[in-house]
Amino acid sequence: MKKIDWDRMHKFNTHWIKIKFFNYKPDINNAKVLKNVRFCEATKEVAFQAVLLDNESISCPGARYAFGWDIQNKHKLLARCYDKQNIQKNTLKSILSQAPYFKKPPRFIGLNTEGEPDLVMSYMSAEKIVNLMQTYHNISGKNLDISLCSMMSICGGVAVRSYLEKDISISFGCYDSRKFADMRRENLAVGIPKKFFEIFFD
Image 1 (spheres, helix red, strand yellow):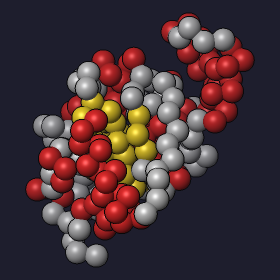
Image 2 (spheres, helix red, strand yellow; image 1 turned 90 degrees about the vertical axis):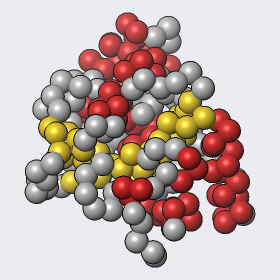
Image 3 (cartoon, rainbow, N blue to C red; image 1 turned 180 degrees about the horizontal axis):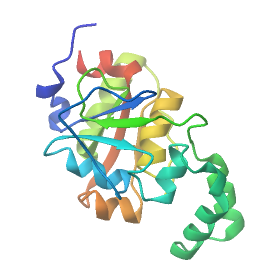
């Protein structure tokens, strides 16, 4: 595959965020290590510089669960979600049981760090997503099955799902992510794993 110039890549006329999961401490000097942030909130910071996240960085219990850093406290996550959302407890349990998460958590997560990412994500308008889908249809000849959820929508529904399932993911976001990531009202979040880079970006 042709090497992608990620620094100049604005395919589909949108800004793509590179996401890399590290099982070791990367040798990165130009990345800012964030503390006490939500994952969705951290995606906003990459407009200014590369970002590095670790177990101590993420304050959101949903993201901590999705990245495998706090899966033993599922009951606390359910209690928090129940307090914030008008959903029955049994329904929340069912939704959470279907949510993707890392069984082996990464040590670090890089956003726009150097090198080839594991996936890219963007906040895109519906019109741009239609263009993306046309490219997908023309190359694959298939429909794209997606799973939508209003819980852990960016961290789990886009980043973790795209990585684990090696498939494109689309999310409307959740109340927190739309607020803290500054998602425009017309935008959705899209994640594309490495498997599809050649289709969309070569």
